[in-house]
Length: 187
Image 1 (cartoon, rainbow, N blue to C red):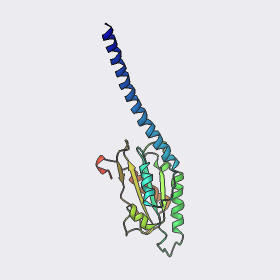
Image 2 (image 1 turned 120 degrees about the vertical axis):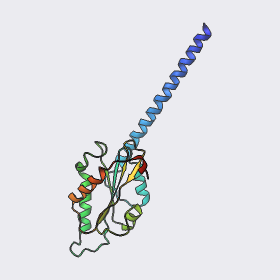
Image 3 (image 1 turned 90 degrees about the vertical axis):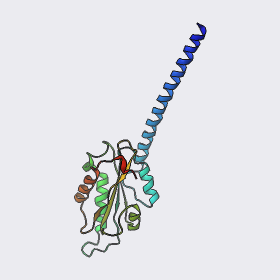
Image 4 (image 1 turned 180 degrees about the vertical axis):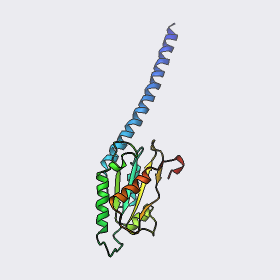
């Protein structure tokens, strides 16, 4: 009787240890997600993109159900009608980063999305903008799946013929943000 009691106690301890490991792994996974979200929030909603490494860093902290927008507003296009178009675009982009209510139905609720920006056309091309076909702006968007395992970059949103206003940018972002992420679209 004493041996079977010890065996029973050993089995009970082993089962408890296995249960503790499962809870511990679940706890570790949850803590990891919390830290990722905290780090994403610390990055801010309006960072200047200075290199491909900056972009990679931002994308690696996107998390589950995430959206990241990169606005490239080059100053090298000479518009004879509007010498300050890049300022107008920058201010519209900044306003969108501050008031993200137009994206309320996309991604996860209660998240603030990141609106990175640069005025370097060559850097925009290294991010995925085409070499030609846009004078005023190229906007890229990355979106992660609900579980955060898949990342997709949208086709570039290009503004070539006229300087877009805030509402034109909003509509374009809403259209692209509504696209579903499929597992086969992983980058």
